[in-house]
Amino acid sequence: MSDKIKITIDGVVVEVEPGTTVLNAARQIGGNIVPPAMCYYSKLEESGGKCRTCLVKVSKGSEKDPRPMPKLVASCRTTVMDGMEVQNITSPEVIEARKGVVEMLLINHPLDCPICDQAGECHLQDLGFEHGAAQTRYEFKRRTFERVDIGDKIQLHMNRCILCYRCVFTANQITDNRVHGVLGRGDASEIGTYIQQAVDNDFSGNVIDVCPVGALTDKTFRFKNRVWFTKPVDAHRDCPTCSGNVTLWYKGEEVIRVTARKDQYGEVENFICNTCRFDKKATSDWEIEGPSKVRHTSVISSNHYDTMQPLPVIQQKPALIIANQEQFQKTSKQ
Image (cartoon, rainbow, N blue to C red; front, top):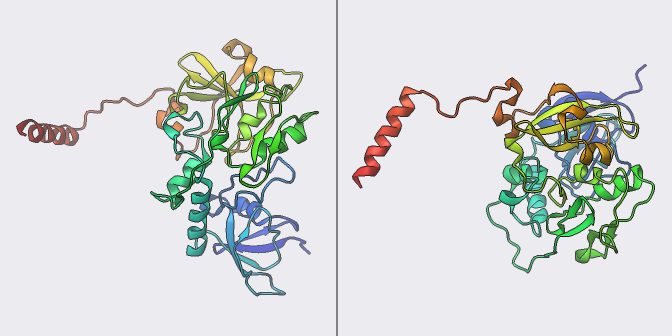
């Protein structure tokens, strides 16, 4: 007799282990059924329940108690029950609520994507595109902060922070001594340290990888290039400190950034040390495995780098040439 629990999400039935959250049950199905998550991180204990972007509607509680839950619930914090039925993308109520959550997250987060190093890899940017509104109803003064260096190679820009706590949990769980956290309460809350450049340990760079927005950035990579002009390649080395499995980001023949490898949900597979991240930026330091897998919806895939031969910018299409000529004639007559 199976001990697994059956749950239906957007009409798709899946069997999961007891204690599984609705979000992880949806991830077993995959595709568009998976709710977005800005604060939940499967590799970090106690994460989730902060951003509310993963809200879903439970239309049936269980077989024993089929009553629907009266309010939308955070799927990263809600445990499945046998016979539970959940609506995500099939519920207009969920889509409207998620739109409101995105509007709230953007209250203090500036839309400075053109100059943000996270552009092209930002989950909030994706959510803003999918659910965001053209205007905000917020009329009060926004919070503003100066950029600060919390480490010799890590810069914090609190203007962009959404207080997901991922960097705090990462420092708590993979380092020996956490020296940064949330200071203040309410609308005065901010990530910080009491002493600048206090973050100094061999795994501190991982707070950059877990940040879903551009609040924590790599100072050695800032403003060097846009991510869609680079080519990510999987590589590894024999590292005594970490797994040594990384992604090298190439611009031409130069490695301009090294990051940990991430899965399809943007979560780090194995945390890497600062030596691999900051000090090993030569191809000779690594054994190259091949191009990284990139989602076709990502702007990085526009380079078609997996073929190592980018498509030509100028394409000989007769219909396009004729249309351009007609448009040129109209413009030149005016």
